[in-house]
Length: 119
Image (cartoon, rainbow, N blue to C red):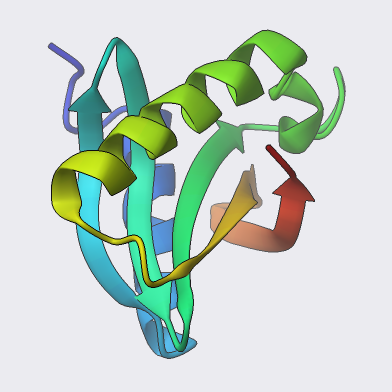
């Protein structure tokens, strides 16, 4: 189990708050499906959005979004397909976003990358 005070958990909470402020409806957090974990499932307008959240304490070793590799995107896409089939979201357009969260001087800096990758 992940400690509730871990940076990853805090980053996901900040990402959810950010999306809500931008008018997104959060459908699920930490969705586990078919061997995949999707950090946030949200809707906005005609879109069903699968969001990967990456959090870091600094960018010394690279930006958080750089750690979403091909293997990770394939797992998210696979989970998204299964999610859509099970939840009957076929009428929505699908988008894959990444939210990068960096803890800088005690504050969370968020970068939202829409359409970060495609199926």
